[in-house]
Length: 273
Length: 292
Image (tube, rainbow over the protein chains, first blue to last red):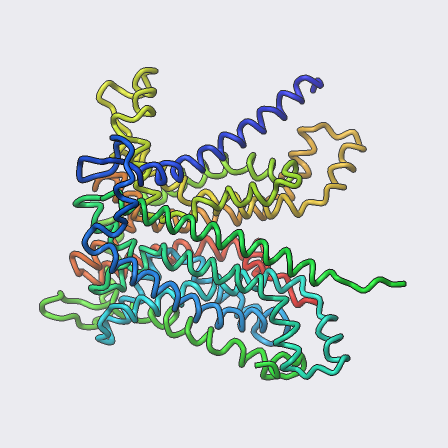
């Protein structure tokens, strides 16, 4: 290949990647833009002019505020439970050699490899068979279930590079096990735990398929949109999506920043002199 | 909890695992048992269901809904191939030329996940709208007839699926490309490998685990999806997920819905196990062994 040909290939590869990024960003731009749409119809698919109306009255649609409240409550609770359970599991899987470790890894992976529609349908099958009424609690149970595996995978990947000599150093300096865990281990794995919690929250507040099966008469934000999609979609739906987008983005950037700080902390090795 | 972290405590790993595994057993594994039971029942919502080992439901489900099954795998397959073609060059560029922009570029890749799935899918209605510029351009170059449209077609559904699951393809591809030792490239060039040979014989084979992982992570949710077909298509584009959803929640024909779920899961499980056999469970689940 000639030098010019090689340059051309390089350039087109970069251009192609740039176009893919534009493609990835376009729907996000449209969601944000259409939260300012002055729509005259029941639907919000065609641009009709700029307005701040929907942002000034974000909950001006009956039912949307309640749906948002349910979503935030379920996301918060399921994140707390799944993060605690998942972190404990990740610690067990990374730090110990024990019988059944491979099988456990595979079992935790299975929910991730199952289509959501199957997870939702089977859970509903159980609730139907046992005569459990579906609602807030069953949604919460379902969300913890699918979040646990994600938390394990996320925390585990951060734990693998963990420097155990720091814990040994703490104990050499007289810390007991509890102090070591609280003051050394936990702060060091915290970025991984926070990243997992953020992922769990984002997955929970966004989940439609599994929730749809186990919601009963409870309405979450995605269920509200699903119902609205048949009748009317107000721009407020986009305002909510834009808010969730910005909150998640800020939280993500904070997590990254926190992680950098923890990495710096972990790499503070006394000079050898 | 701290005492559990002592390494030689034999019960410690089990105690740490117990609550989470318990949750998964109760709300992931046991429900599958109940779904199996329902799939073998006979009756209706009014007269009640009785367990009769009614395997006929499976036979009927396959013959009645073979169209939707085939369509699901066709759409999911198309979307997976498209994702691979779209994702590989981007993952390659980020991994080998990203430099200090790597993390920022990866953030851009997962940014779509920060928006709500349903709203993201609905935004494709705007993009593919009959009066949108994409339809106009396709009409003027003759790829679409004068009254041709994209919405309510298989094209729209595949477009939506491809977009929604694309990050699941990019991330594993990036992870496997990023792990490739750059010295292997240098060695290949030192041995007078041509650029194409270096790519085909070094880079591509070494990124194979990422390709397989990306294909599975894209194909599995795509095959079970019903949101894109519902919002961007019509009943003529309905996939197996649409059938399961409506049989369960609208028609309340629980045995058929349960049987369909199992058939879908069985097909996918066969694919995953085939992969586990090739790549090993540790590779598949991303666990890399006990930290030293």
